[in-house]
Image (tube, protein in one colour):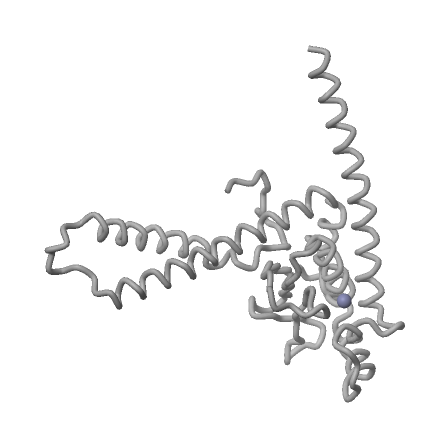
Length: 236
Ligand SMILES: [Zn+2]
């Protein structure tokens, strides 16, 4: 899949990008080996055992799945960028309290067993040395967003980006607020991050609203272009 979408120097990144080249390369080698095996004379003595073949097939499945998730995430980011470029840009250039850039990794991970309260998640921790600097599994000054929902994932992404928009520049104060508001209380999972005074939750809802507006403008433009194209083709 080729997308006309430059990620060079971007801060919103595909969460699967780290292992994509290696995965494609290994998949190519394994497929070649399996095909070679299929086309060989069955009397060959150095054939793979059925256990080795089974292992190889499982590896091929897992690499194919990884590449598919990478491509679906890439498509999601591309669509978001096309529909709401300003919103995308705000997070693409997000900085922490010290005006330092922060990478936002996004993983699309559709989950059939998803419970309604887990449409998406924003994951970040505070650095031990400095409570204003965040980290995730991608390193210092990075955040991870996981989108589980296959239903309207763009809107879920907008929501999670809203959380990031508020939390990254206000990390220390927000974590204090978070501990005070939610720790030791038995709130429903969907309510955590959305107490009425929670500015991260308020920003997430604002981002959803703004994305919905951009989406309306985009679909209107699309309809208009389709109408114009149909008129043009009718004339010819
Ligand atoms: Zn939320």
